[in-house]
Length: 503
Ligand code: FAD
Ligand code: SF4
Image 1 (cartoon, rainbow, N blue to C red):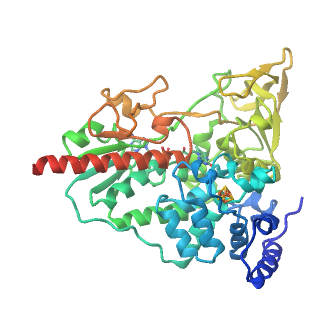
Image 2: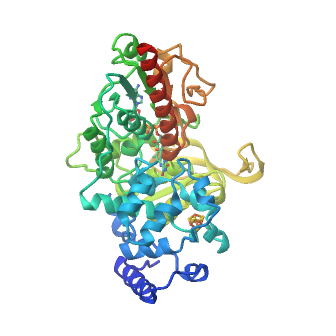
Image 3: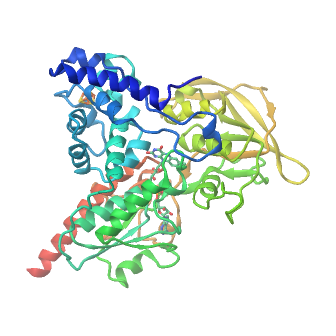
C-alpha cells in the first residue's frame, strides 16, 4: 500500500493553509470541521525493516498549524479531563494554530516535563483524543484532533531551536532526596523536587538512564537522543546520577535514610520481572522473555552485530506470544534483526488487543503475520534442545471476563504446529521483588506491588513510591502522574519538617 510522501503531504497542507490565511477571517466551526485531518509522514515501510530509525517523521509546521485549526476550543474540555496530567490542551493547541510555538511549549511544560516522549508513546486514542468533540462528530476517534502529534510537534520544535529552557531551581535547602529508578516516574520526581531547591540523587541499576523508555521501547518509536536530552535538562538543574547502583544490593533502601542521611526516598523501580506462560518447552534455547530480547537489542546495542559485545540469537521464523505494545515492539525488532517470518500469536481477536492501534498498523505494514484466536500449548525442541516449532491451539470468544473483554475459550482437538526457531514471550511483567524482599517493612499487595496512600506514601515513614512498582505494568503518563503526586507530597513533608525544626 502506498503512503503519500512527506513532500506531498506538506504541499497539500501548504496550499490549504495559505488559502485559510489569505481569507483573514476567523474560522467558524463549519470551516474547522472541513479541514482534513493531517496524516503524519512516515518512513517507507520496506526501507524501515532494515533500520532502527524512527518510523514516524512528525508533522510539518504547516500540517501542525492546520491540525491545530481543527480544534473547536470547546468550553467543556473533555480532552483535558481524560489527560492524566491535565495539560491545558485547547490552550496549547491555540498557540500552534496562531503560529506561536514558544507559547505552546510554555503551556505544556507547566504540567508535563516530557512532552517529546509523551507525544510519541502516550495512548492518546484511549485518553485525550478518545473524547475529542471533533472525533465524536466525525464518528471516528482517529479523525479527532491529533493532540499527541501536536504535543510532539511543539516539543521537537523546541529541541530544533537548540534553546531548551531549563526550569528554575530555588536556592539550596540543604535537604537530600534519593530517587530509586530513572524511569519516567523517577525523572518527574527528580525534576519537581529539585525545583524546590532540595538536593536530588537518582540511583539506577543499569548503566544507562531512562528506565523502560531506554531499554524497552525501541529507538524506531522513541529515539535515545530524546531521552538523553531530558536527562541533560535534569543534569543542568543539578540532579546527581549514580548508575550501576542496585538499591537492595549495592545499598539497602533503609540505609539511604538511616545511614546516608536522605530526608526522603522515592521508589520508582518499575515492573521489570517478565512473566512466562508456564508451558512445556519454555526452557529451550531460542525462547526469550520480551524484556531480555528488547534489552539486548536496545540497551546492549545487540542489533549492531559487528560492534556489540552482546550477542543476539539469529532467527529465521519468530513467534511472539502476546498482544500488547511489548509484543508489537518485540515483533518489529525481530523484523529489523533479520527474521524472515514473524508471527504475533494472540488468544483473542484484534479488537481485544491492548496494543496501540498505530503500533498494530505499523506492524502489519512491516509484514508481521497476526494469528488471532490462537495460542501456544507447548514449545517443541530438536535433539540439541533448540526451538523447532510450537504446538498451538485454536480459540473462540466466550462471555466477557472481569476486564470486560470476551474470554478466549479453547476449541477442543484444534492442535496444529507452527514451525519457528525463536519464541518471544510478551505476556506481561510483574514488579521487581528486590526492594520489597530487602525492605520487609514495606507493605506489598498480592502481586508484589508497593502499597501507597493517596499521596504516594508507603507504609514506611519518608518513603514514597509510584509508577509501575505501584500500578503494575502501566503507561509512561500514569507513571509521570504518580511521580508528580509523590514529589508534591515530598516537598510538602520537607517544608513541614523545616518549619518544625525552626519552631
Ligand atoms: P520504569 O520505566 O520501569 O523504570 C524503572 C527503573 O528502575 C529502571 O531503569 C530499572 O533499571 C530501575 N531499577 C529497578 N530496580 C532497581 C533497583 N533495585 N535499584 C536501582 N534501580 C532500579 N507505555 C506507554 O505509555 N506507551 C507505550 O507505547 C509503551 N510501550 C512499552 C513498550 C515496552 C517494550 C515496555 C516494556 C513498556 C512499554 N510501556 C509503554 C510502559 C511504560 O514504559 C512503563 O509503564 C513506564 O516506563 C513505567 O515507568 P516507571 O518509572 O514506573 O518504571
Ligand atoms: Fe479541541 Fe477536541 Fe479538546 Fe474540543 S475536545 S478542545 S476539539 S482537542
